[in-house]
Each structure stands twice: as structure tokens, then as C-alpha cells.
Length: 84
Image (cartoon, rainbow, N blue to C red; front, side, top):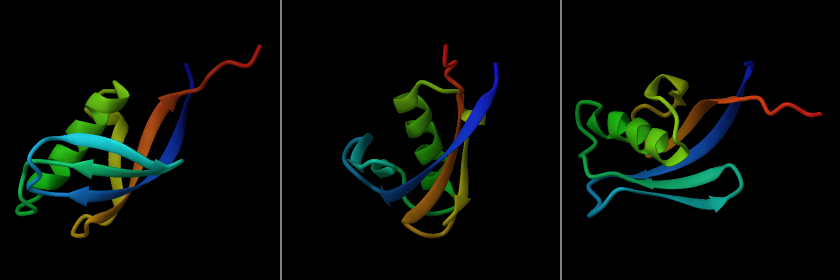
């Protein structure tokens, strides 16, 4: 099956009380993670949280821009829907 890439704008809230993903508007999400923003821990948890939310394997989610910022651009590979 073919895959297509979708890009999402993410605002990360590290050290939150609980993990969550909230759609602010189409293509823009707020992601809360428990980890602190040190040593890439929050980035790793952002990928895990998004993978769980969208029910995708970790390998299909990648942070493209913003590794050291709260504002990130994330690439997600999804299966193309067949149009019949």
C-alpha cells in the first residue's frame, strides 16, 4: 500500500500532569508530555504520544524542524486511501 506524508504543526507542553494530544485547528496540535525538555526526552515522548494518538508505529513519525523548540513541524506517514 502506498503512503503519503502529512505535516503537522505541534506546540509542545513539557512537564505536563498527563499526556494528551489536542487539535487546535486542522493541521495544528497541542501535545502535552510528562518529560522535561532535556536530552531529547520530551521529543521522544512527543513521537510516542502522537504514535499512540494516531495508532501508528513510531517509525512513521518524525520531527522535521524544531528539535530544540516548543514549536515543531512533524511529518507523519499515513496509508493512502484508495479512491474508487
